[in-house]
Image 1: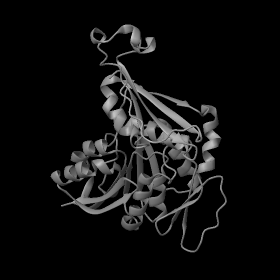
Image 2: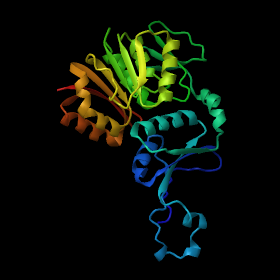
Image 3: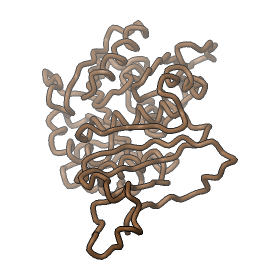
Image 4: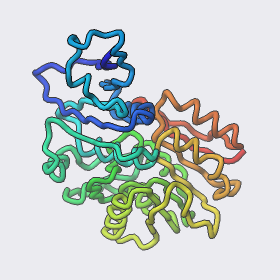
Length: 318
């Protein structure tokens, strides 16, 4: 098959769609496809590497396909008008950095890149998560009800507004497992939202890390604006540069299944017998793989939450 496309759903002219197209080296196609499927299950894959000109009539193949670079492949998703393009793009970029894709080329069709900075704000409104936490955009007015904890965020182009299922799952778990004065670690912090939430819930020292310097910059701006003094945020590739001066009571990892699996054999060094690890960013199709990895590395599943095809786990040592 010349063009390995599979597009599900109705992309008719009555609805406005935005295409997000990402191109990577051919050998990274499987990783890219897995990440893109987190945004939408309706994928278009362009892979011309298996074209066999010896068995095809050249004049029946489009010239652009004949001349296409066979060393790269592309995956596209199509977003309806009500989906925030910027939120999806920032989510993808964070996952690309975490997985370590080699210079992925991201393009959009149907929206101007220069409009992202403001247009996406229309989709970001105050949202209550769990029993107490309310995530409020920095530019929105909100009067809290009794007992509500307000977390003001301006995520910029870093992932983490509280609207995505993966973030909601961790925040709900944070309400259950954050203990007063606990030492908290956030791996892959994005906008810094989870560390800020933990601090609001009473955590003592919070340390946040991300592989993306832009995310760290955004997170530090949000931390500064929050007025919280017990959070630090630095660049680290997963656990490589994490502060190890003491064990952590609570660890958050809202990343992707493959990276959680890669991290699992090492994360136990940062945990004591009562530490709770909150893992999210796990698409349901991969949840059993992640659970099996945890259990084979000496952990037990304490709680499992599901939200719209995503899974969040609370994990402890056996």
